[in-house]
Image (cartoon, rainbow, N blue to C red; front, side, top):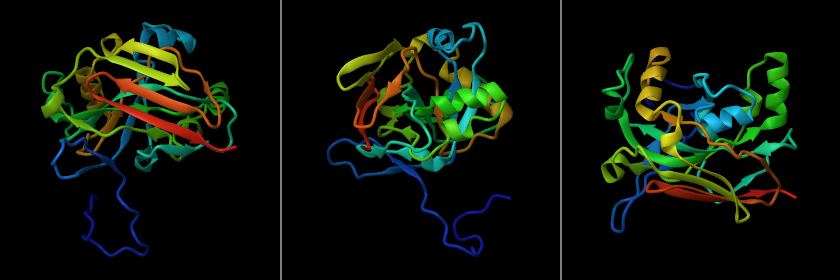
Length: 239
């Protein structure tokens, strides 16, 4: 059963709604995008699939992060329980409407806007989970694991089919590709996801990362961008 904020009494105070800022121009009122769920696509760039030991012919698969994993600040803590934290820069799709069994032809009508995000991964925990056939929750769904830029409405950028995507650490370029290199396009991702879930307004979809993922250290400065969509800069705190 779905309920809204005041539809029933709660025995504890409800948590604050996770939100991501919407990119605004000078003079526009600040607005936020409330996050419902975060879906992520695995191995959606052929070169990244190969560097992770998979065939580039395999279809991508889906996993998720909690809504409150979003981080829009300039700093985030280095997560506990890992010494092998990896960066994965991604184009993020923000849905303004939802649906089930959406066709690829209609998929883009669900999109509110786009952002650039980073799927932070505790790679050592992921490797251990893979070895034992266990879920990736501790590797992918930890606190602050989804840094994200402000969301640019599609009304201002249309629906990009080609755009440079980059990530640098302390000024060193580590990931560089074009979103046109994705194995599955944005419409195909939305359509496929809607076969498994009822997509809802507020859903975010991290669409996969290109090759070049590598280890981050405490104190690193991460700068990433999807050309024409947005940029994101943050630092990893911790001694």
